[in-house]
Length: 557
Image (cartoon, rainbow, N blue to C red):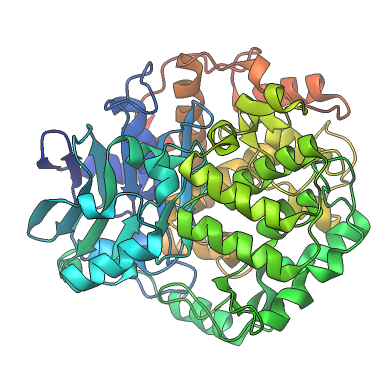
C-alpha cells in the first residue's frame, strides 16, 4: 500500500531537543496523516494526561499524496488530546504548507514538553532551531507571518502559528497556516499555547530523496477534471447550499431557537460570491474553491466565509449582513479561533442577553474571548463549561459545539454526531450529504449504522491520504484503489483501525455509551446506538472490547 515516507521528528520544547525515529513499519500499516498520528498519540500520550500539560503531544502529519502535484492534496492533518472535548481529536487544514513540510524529509512532527519562554521552532532538512520570541507575545496570526518573513525570509505557507487565543488557552483555539487556513476543531491551538510555542516553520529540499511514485493515471485525470469542472462550489465554496438547506431542511437560527433564517439569502452563496474578488486555491489544486472576499465600502477583506461560518456567525446569531459575517470570519482567523465553536459560543451569549442580531456586540465579544477579557474569560471555556452561568441549554456533544447540519432534521447525521469520537463535528461521519441528496431518507435512525460505519472509515482514510473532502466526485473509490495500490476494503480497514484507536483512547479517559448522546431527541437513538456498536464489533456500552494492536490491514492479522 502506498504510504508516506520519512522519520518521526520529536521536538521537546522544554528540553530544546529534536530526535528522529524511523517508523517504517508504522507507515506501512497506517499510511500517514490521521491514521499515523492517531496510532502515535494512542501509544505516546498518557491516558490520564492533562490537555494543557507537558505530557500532551501535538502531531502534524502528512500523507503520501502530498508528495504529488495532484489536485485535492494540499492538506495536512493535526492530532492531539483536545482541550475542548478531553478526548483525542484530529483536524486538517489546506493551504500551501504540505509541500514545504514534505521538503524537510519527515513524515510527522511530534511536539512535546513545555517551554519556559515563548518559542518559534524552525524545522529544516538539516536540523531544528529554537528561537525565543518574547516580542511575539499576543501577536496576531498575520503579525507572526510578518515576523517570519522579515526575520527568516519565509512566507505564511512555511508556517503554522497560533494567535492570542492559543496563547490564552481558549479551548477552541485553532492552529493557523497561510494566515487564513485553520486546523480548527478541538482547540489544538491551545495545546501549542500551553507549550509556549508561537509558531513552527518548515523549509528544506529533501523531497526528491523520498521516492514515492504516484500512479498516473489517475493523477493527471483528476487534475484535469478539477480544472474544467463547472461545479458551483468553485464559485461559492460551501455557501452555495445555504438557501437550499434553509428552505428544505434546517438552518439553525438564534442559538437553535428557530430552524430557518428569514434572511438566509443575505448571507448565502450569491451574497458571498458578490464579494469575491479573485480566485483562491490550495497547493497544487486546480479546483480553486476558496473565497477571497472584500467589501469595498468598509475595506474588510478575508478568505470566506464558508457555510459553517455563515451559520455560526450569521443565522445562529441572527446577523443578516454578509459584511458583518466577513468581519467575524477575519477576527477568528486573525486571533486564531475555530469559527464554529467561537460563533456558537457567542450566539449562546447573545441568547443570554437577548441581543440576537447585534453584530457589533458579537465582534466585541469575539475579541474578548481571544484575550480572555471580562465575559470573554468565561466564554473561552466553550458552551459545555459556561452554559449554566449563561442560563442557556448545553447544546454540545462531548463538549464540542454543533456544526450547521441539524440532527433534528437529518437523523442519520444526528446519530453521527452522537457517536463521533470528536464530538458534534460534521466531517467525522458525513451522513449529511447522503440525506441532503435523498440517497438516504433523512428521517429515522434505524438501519443506518452500517452506512455510518463505512462513512466514518472512508473519512478517516481520506484524512490519512491526505485527500480534500471536496474531491469526492473526482478521487473516487476506484481511483483511491489505484492511487494507493490496494483494495478499497483494505483502505477502509485503515480507517476502521483509526476510529477504534480513537475510541479506545477515549474509553481509557472514561468515555462510554453515556457520552454518545444528543441534547435533543431523535427517533430510536438507543436502538441505533446498539446497531452501531454491533457494526463496529464493540461492547454494548460503547467501549472497545480489548486493547487495540498497532496494525491496520487484514494482512497484519
